Length: 125
Image 1 (cartoon, one colour):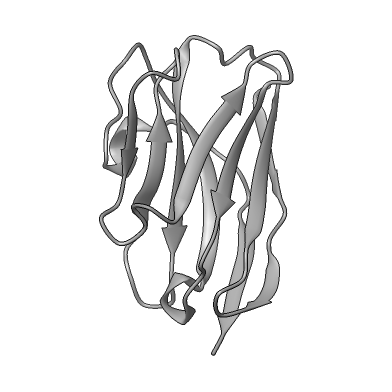
Image 2: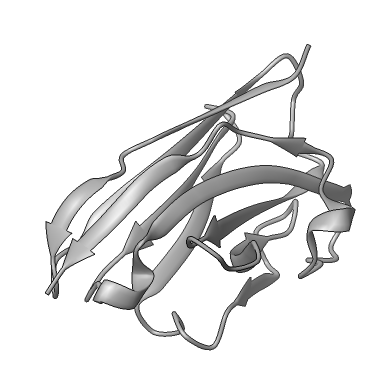
């Protein structure tokens, strides 16, 4: 059974940094796109960053470009999200998810079939 476990969330002041980790078990995910999504109260879940199986293709939401970096370590079956210069509007529950095999990085949730339980990120002003 595939399981994704996120960690690294917490409370941070604006301008601070956090690194989220997502450890996968039950499947080798090296052939799959991985994505980080976030969902704030009353809002839809949106893609924050995604990375293709090779790591060559990445995609970021406009609101986080230049501040967030997604990476993967297939030997550890782990994907990371480095978040710098955090803003109060980054406050949300962050989820990692397994997407399709290959180089495509979809932006919508329908293309991701396995999800973690989420980790809360709160940025204070």
